[in-house]
Image 1 (cartoon, rainbow, N blue to C red):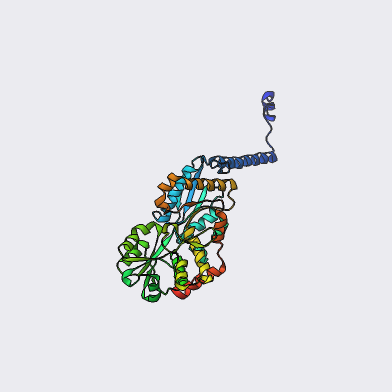
Image 2 (cartoon, one colour; image 1 turned 90 degrees about the vertical axis):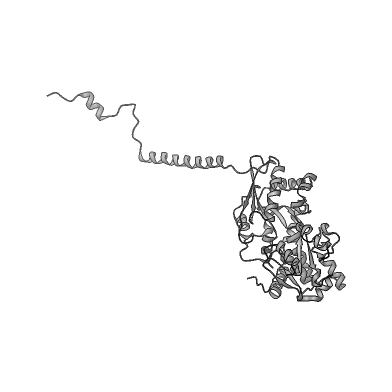
Length: 392
């Protein structure tokens, strides 16, 4: 019987010399771990390549997108203002970044503002829009408010003004008639915890005892109600005064009582440049009573006036935003606001008030928004005792 083939048996017994030995279990584990590390590194690097961090500290916004968080619905006055100013700012910034307005409405501006402070990237590309609607809840410290404007960084501000007026058919020819009539006259409002609050504090400063009806859907409907004789006292902001109030005063059916005024650089109430012939509420008080207003009431009024009128609308970035990006945004805003072509084109949207992005803006804004507890207590007490509104 033939013996085993020596070539076959030797091949089965040992692998060819060129074949590698089978890997050890420890070696295989190390190789698998290395591949896992490479996968993680590739994922991170790939993610950065697809979504690179913003580079806004180099003086150039080329390739970036300016995202504006508007905490109110589309189509309103704040939305119109924000889209116009945001578009112009994006065109003026070096590198001309893209522009993406985002409406995050809900809770009268509170929800969107809360979302911004909790999630906005501090890189100079995400910007918050504020207006009186979102600022008054901050002043009142409503439970739903999770933001603090003193922790944000302001980029620019833009103000507005207002005039309080009355219908003459109600027997009003001057502020003295309003004081004498007391609650026989009715004020029409939207909400006591909104922009109306500044006017209500003005009434208290003047010791006016007006009846008040709230719930109107806007100042336009209030103006129409006054013309129909359903209410007697109203206020209109600068943007609508020319069309809604001036004709009534010209034909004698209404009389201007006072303007809310503006705050100067020292925080004092001065005449509104758009209503130079209309005395401020403080001037009216001094003329009627022959003395200075009550200091507590005046302090509250100055605080409200700054928050809701002098700095009514503003743009903010989160804390931690690179200083270079903040400076560039602010300097570009100042240059934009000083451009005669921009001012002429934006006259209607800005309501006749300049873009404020001065070197001392942050200091003035910080002072205006750092509201004293005494002011908050006074406002809360006024709402509770006069308008039966309790802030929990």
